[in-house]
Length: 226
Image (cartoon, rainbow, N blue to C red; front, side, top):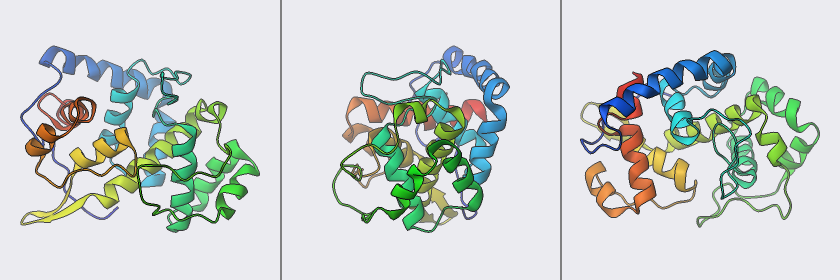
């Protein structure tokens, strides 16, 4: 990732009150106590800011349960599903973003199944709000419960979104973290309206607008964890 600007606050709207926000510092400490080496490995391999990734994890899975599956089938610390994981890996390969170290981690969990993903004749720019469909599952929920694998794929996903959501401003290149977190929540192919943050919050459904507040609002993760 090139040198870019990531703000601590993108809007004055808030989701957490100060006491709730403060509690996340303790959860962050627990996250790093349990899984710090794997979190740092994921952000190093994908070149994303540690604070951003910690914030995503705490929003998605504040109980830090690697086996948690939500009612919609999203799994683990990064709360991704099997289709998203396959989609992310294929896109990373197609865009020539995968390092040998990333492949080693992925292959450790997937074994020869990763070769099916690498050989998939699919377009990573497929239109619509749908993941790439191979017709059967290559990545499964057991894979996603593996902390090292889940964290790497989640970080790869966040890295792809960050690189795609950069705007030129008078101060330099700004990461639209509000748009990043909406797409992380709603899906890679989700069409986020082109608007400033407060306008975006007014236009979006409740869940994605709350994600913006949780990550990039007053008392949000970026302010709290920085």
